Amino acid sequence: MPSPVFPVPRSFDVLAEPGPPPDAPVEVHHDPELPEQGYSITRDATGTRIGHRDDAGLRYARQTLDQVLADRELARQALRVRDWPDFPVRGFMLDISRDRVPTRRTLRRYVDILAAARMNQLELYTEHTFAFADHAPVWAAASPLTADDMRWLDALCAGRGITLVANQNTLGHMERWLAHEGYRDRAEKPEGFTIHGRHRPPSTLQPTPENAAFALGLVRELAATVRARRVNIGADEPWELGKGRSAAEAAQRGLGRVYLDHVLRVACPLLDDGYEVLFWADVLADHPEVAELLPTEGLVPVVWQYDGPQHARAALDRATPEQRARWAADGFDMDALAGGFRKRAEALTAAGRPFWVAPGTGAWNSIVGRLDNAMENLLDAADVGREHGAGGYVVTSWGDHGHLEPPPVTYPGLLYGAAVSWCADTNRDTDLAAVLDRVVFDGPGLGAALTAAGSVAALLDAPILNSSAIAAALSGEGRVPAVAPDRLAEAERVLSAAADALAHARPAAADGDVAVRQTRQAVALACFAVALLAAGGVAELEPTSAADLLASLDGLLVEQRACWLLSSRPGGLDDSIARFAPLRAALAQRAAG
Image 1: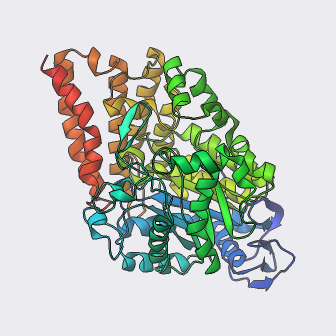
Image 2: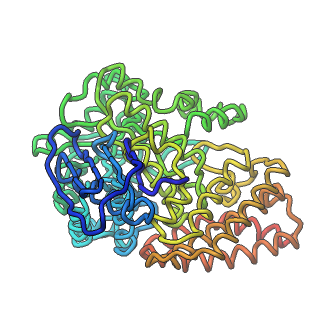
């Protein structure tokens, strides 16, 4: 039977005796013996007694008591609870730079969910979607968050015990800046670069003092809108680093040292100002010698990994020789992925450096989620992070390739990450469908639909790293993954069951109707993708079938636009919809015979 309390406390004993009457007193006392953010609750015939270590512990105690009182049977029983979190910082990072910038209403909804899940940090990952005072050409078409938006959100978070942390990339993933003529000369390779066999526009800043000062200015402007003395400077995936203007320096001094110098140019002034500075630790995995040179205080590497070890091994085992050759040419050690967070953090654990962990919701590149992989990934992060004393656990939800999935698709992974970062031992078997219905939607149906649809990626048995067969089918980029007929039939059955659950869903949450509509659209896109997979791809379609699918796709895109505007700002919508252009063009060509 699902626990009536979420997250499940580490110690929750229901006693064989009656609890207090409804009008019995509630006594509150400070208990310094409890761990930080910890609390205790004792209920018996004489009343209720709450012990708490700090303000956070008192907040979580009252939240637990509210859930107990909401359960008719449990409210009558005596009980004892003793609880505290595995990780001091339990955060959520939402990508708002891959086209989808949330409305204030959507941001408020996320804050409500984070508070209910006992998460205490929020980051909005920005590249170009903040209205920087002197850089209007970069964000003008993006419907960016403004300084007023950030101050509003900061106050909202503070009232819920959540720290809003400024997050601004400062090295890689700067393509939206470098696309503009006034910024292109800051690029490591202004002419662009090739990765995964494709040419891409420039994305990485040249690691110069001038560019570090430029990036530092962006961080400071964003950080000035919030009260937190913690920032995230990103610095992940600098694909071109050492391959363009810094090539000679990298050859002489080593790529890892060139990277670290740039990070320190950005971070040290912030450290001097009293900030704690987070940055992504992927480069450290390839350059372990750099880990030993990190400052011991204030600069915190965040180890990220978004595929669970079993999923990664399954995908690698099925990789073609061509894929492996391409990974090797791009310099990727793909086999290390099968080691999960333990392998990813090896450079830091070997050097004895503290770090945080950052798994993912599995929502991006999926349409309806990759829930089996996400749960494995989230639990792996919790187990490894706890083993090595990680101070923070940040659930990430990226927006790769247009952020096509709606907010509800992120909720299952977000809630599971919140649960296992609070206490992995008592929450690893969380009934997500039940928790979603009770904690998020206040009514039945949506939880079953989201968890069922989220299982389809695994059901297809066509594992892809950081993506799904459904997303691959919708990309329109040629061959689709081969999927066995029985797997396709099972996926169709599960998606049909999800659609039926949506038809009968009765969420009482204020945005319940929006969540149902957006989830229905995601399920419809997934069904469309399964039809493409069953056909073996566009190239295998008869012209009549292609024409029918083209008409279906056009209808789906009309609804995609409508659903987008229910929770996201209009900037970025056209760019996101354009992700379907290759598929639409291929269908049109095939329909024409």
